[in-house]
Length: 545
Image (cartoon, rainbow, N blue to C red; front, side):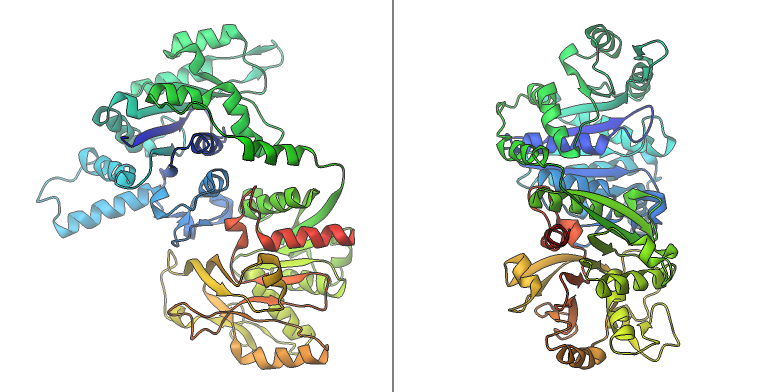
C-alpha cells in the first residue's frame, strides 16, 4: 500500500496534548496491524534541544542512533513501543542548516534560495524519508500552535503534501481547546472555530478535530463545530483528561479517532487488538493503596518535564510491582549534612539523575552518602553514577578531595575524568558520547540478576567517565568489606570503547539496593516493559517499607 500521512496540528494554546494524541493514535493503528512511525517538527532555530536548558524545553530525549531530541519522542516510543531515529526529530534549525549547506555547495545551481520552494522542499524531504521503508503510516506532529510565525513554513509544507499525494493518503488532525465557563455553565466553541479558521486561511482543511475538554461535549456543540469547521460530526473527537496517561489510547478508541482515520484513508483493518494495552491499564487500576515514597534529587526540579522519562519510568516500575509510587522532587541545592535527615526522611528510595554543571553537586554527594549510610535503596543515573563514585572515594576510601575533573581542576584525586575522545572538543551540540552502546554484564552481579541477560544495550549522554586508575583501590575497599563493594561492568565490545575499560555500572552489594549506571535506563522504559533498574529500585523500596 501507499505510505499514508497523518499530520497533527494544534491551536489556541500550547499544552493541549498533541504529542499524546499522536502517540495514542500510533498505538491504536499499530494494534490494527499497521507499521507506524512518528516524527516531530519543531519550529525553533536550534539544531536540536541538546544545548537548551531543561527549563527551556524539558528533558532532552536521546535515541538509539544518538539524536538529541524533543521530549515528545519519549512519549512516542513509550506508546508505540518502537525505537525511533534521528529522522523522527526535525527542527527548523536543522532544516535551515541543510538548506544553507546545499546553497554553499552550489546544489541550487545559482537559483535564489527562498522559503518556497527550497525550505518547504527540505521539510517535505524529511516527511517523505520513510517512503522506501516498511512503514505504512507516518504520523507527524507540528510543534507550536497554528499561526505562530516561526511555524508557517512547516504548515505550508504539509499543505503541499496534501496536494502531492492522493486524498485518501493524507489526514489532517487539529487539536483544539473547548473551554468550560463555570459562570455560564457552558462549553465555548469559539476558540476552536477561530483556530480552524486560521488553519483554513493557511490552506489546510482539517479532517478531524480532537477537542481537549474537561466536560462531555453536548451534541449541540458537536453539531455546531461540524457545521462551522466543515467536518463530519463523527470527526469531532472528545478528549477529556484521563485518570492515567496510558489510558488515553483506549479513551480515544472509544471516541472513534482511529476509526475516523481508517475511514478517511480507506484502510480496511478496523478491528484492533487492544488486549495487551487493556490488560496493562486493568493492572494499573487494580493497584490498591500500597505506596512507596521515592525522591528524585536534582537541580531542575522546578519543572517536572526536566525529569519526565525518570518520572514515567518510576510509574512503569510501580505498575510492575503493583504499588503506587509517590514521587518527591527535591532540590539538591537544599541538601547538606545538616538538612539531609529532614529533607530525606520517610523515603523508601532515592534517585540522583543526570545533569550538567557544578551547581548542586555537593548536595547530590550528600544525598548519596545519606542513602548509603541509612540503607535507603538508591539508583544513580549518569552524573548520579559519577557522584556515587566521588562519594564512595571520599567517605569510604578517605580521599577527601576526590572529585570529578569536570568540577575541580585542582583535585589531586580525579576519580571522574574526561573521556579521551572528548579532549579538545569545543562545540557543545551533538558532540557528547550519545546513543546506544552494548554492555556485558558479569556473573553474580545485581545488574545481571535484574536484566536477566548477559548483554544489554542502553543509551548514553555524557563527556566524563570513571577513572580506571582508582579501580584497584576501590576493589581493595571492597575486600575490606568482605564482599565486593563495587562491581565494574565494562563496555567491552565496541570500537572506540577505551580498550574495553569504560565502566558502565557500579554496585555496592553490602546494601539493600545501591546501583548506578553511566547510561540513562529511563530512555528505554515502556509502560508494558519497564526498565530493570527502576523495577529493582521500586521492589527494594517496597520490601523495606
